[in-house]
Length: 89
Image (tube, rainbow, N blue to C red; front, top):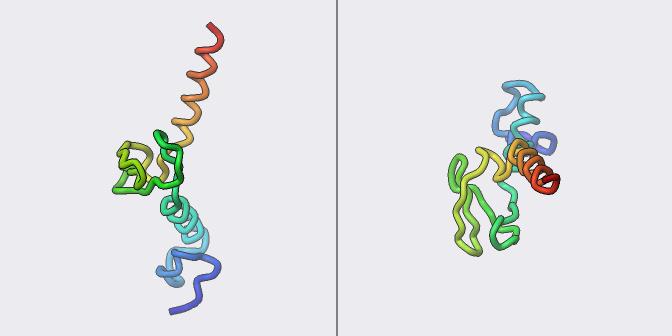
């Protein structure tokens, strides 16, 4: 097997699919497999159970989120808008 320093986990594809697609895949998979912050206990111990299902290994909280990240950009934006609406009234 060749070296995978540039493309990390996408090295399993070899020379197929193009460099741009392999870099994008490696970035998404790296972010998905990283530890994330739990919304209830605030520890970096949330891991992905399956597509869209996330579980904290410390407090056993299970919650739904994005397919690859527990908090999607759309959810972050909507929380910010709702917070601003609550402070205006």
